[in-house]
Length: 119
Image 1 (cartoon, helix red, strand yellow):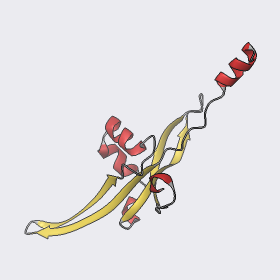
Image 2 (image 1 turned 180 degrees about the vertical axis):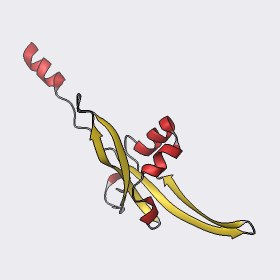
Image 3 (image 1 turned 135 degrees about the horizontal axis):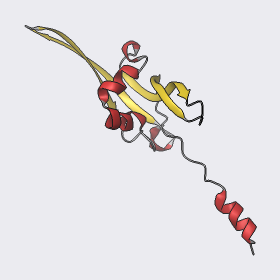
């Protein structure tokens, strides 16, 4: 039989949370027509490989893609492929210590067939 103190302690211990993961496929398209030359980079969310919180989707929904895309620090230098999106250059509020600003970085992502959700 548990005491009230044991119940309070057990209830206050948090379950370990799954690590959030945002995986995207980067593709580059280049074409031309009579008016000029064009290049487009596309980041498509890999829904089955994303786990929990999708930082890019959330931030783009809140502030717009025009604010999010320029903050991907290595987008111009990455070849086409699968990438995990991670935050970098995090700054914290000096009073609360809460992260209040960050950039994004694309890290190459390798599929692991043995792992759940391929990652």
